[in-house]
Length: 248
Image (cartoon, rainbow, N blue to C red; front, top):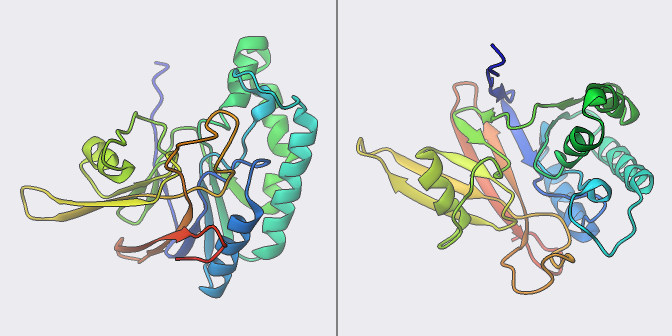
């Protein structure tokens, strides 16, 4: 069978800093620095990048007014990884790819499907992920922070009519956290057994006015802290970053 069995990745117990939707090289330095400074002050033990850390705009299907220069984009991304390594030299680091990272394998699938495995393996070597001790997960893999499932958010269409967190609850019927919508929100509901279930969507750390959505979106900067206990219990702090760079 070609059926793929998806195995969740379990974060080790400790305090994790979650940086969703950085979209390097379209990241916002003010927001990134605010999130990192907050994580350092809280003495986090791990960093999780739950999707769209890398934008891969140069190999996107969508046309762009910006020049397509994947080498330059990759150079900036490596500089960013160097920066993270310098700021968090001892912390565990986990990278869950999102839909923007998937632009690269999709590019190979359409241009040279016979070679898809070779350049993708080489790509991890170019980024020196093993030397940096960054664990790169599989596409569409669920991350478990104790009993809390964490996804990027593109895995299913989330309704944002009320807010993304409510849309996430309607899909998961569980505690859950996602990014992808670039919006900070929270929704709490109760199941038939009386268990309170809360879902969270987390803000982004990228340009809030990109070429494809320059006006009228509901995006905001933000990040999250998740404390994972050994028994699987967890606590969440879902933070916004104000336009002046202050964490709220």
